Image 1: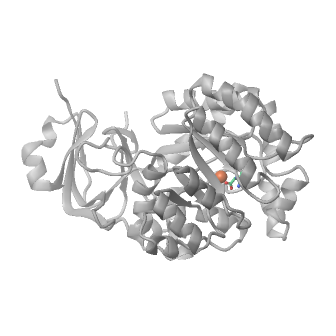
Image 2 (image 1 turned 135 degrees about the vertical axis):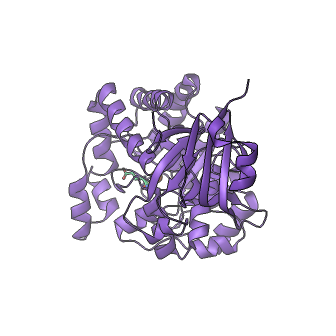
Length: 411
Ligand code: NIG
Ligand code: FE
């Protein structure tokens, strides 16, 4: 028995995803039918509702001239943490450097101390709160990294909390192991790399929760050679590589990501043309994080140069204690104003691009036939209003697998 889960009708537009030329594919005056949680039909309201009458659906939603989008896929966050670093935000505004704070034992290392001290219950409740905020802002799939434990026990604990949150929360949560996020106090990068490879990775593989392995390849953190050791060991353990690359200096993380065939290379503020070509040729998705540049007062990544290279890019929030925004709408606005992307490019980067960065293209981030019906309905007539109405949450209703999970019709 199949179930007509939901019909959304009378939308001003429904954005399906990218067409074969990576341009936006959208229908005007459109409807969407969901059968068994997946998109069964999308097209003109009359055609779709003839075949799938809203009266027969478990949920009938009159979009009433609003824009209907794929739910956002936030492909880079450090959304599980404890503690409060708002004072560092204020210090950075007075001119203190991010890496200076880290070198003094603040920044990531301060969050590590807070996470080690937090109970599982505190961690779980922090994460679920952030997931609620993300969902209310239209995010239906999010990647969350470990990396505030920096010892085997706490890294496993973080991944366990991430998995449990995924089980009970409507947002799909994808787990990334990032034991190589910083060098813990009392050791050095070389010795700690050995610990990540010899102690943490085998335990993470046994635990079986993490899907990706990420490393902070950066001057003063992990060298290219150390990053390679971690990611190759991760690959042997079945984890797909991702790289924090060229964030503060151009060190070689992008070339490493290309060499290993990583799912993504992220940040890329200092990437050059050689890096862009290498990533495009290797099919590695560049993940651009304009919120980080915004909150650090740094220069944005050169999104136009990446787009001109022909591949698709992802835009994500990088939500973490240093970049404290769960809003994909805000990231998309910054992608437009700070990085020169068009609203359509930024929207595709925050949906389909994010899915690519998580090896889920076709499965998430589009409303193509047979895709899971993960939907954000915005309180405006077109997707352009998402960045145009910056600083405001334009998302009104969210569906996950066709079920209303936020806003109208939520049960
Ligand atoms: O992606 N750059 C390294 N990691 C994070 C920041 C994490 C933190 O400051 O807590 C990032 O921006
Ligand atoms: Fe990050």
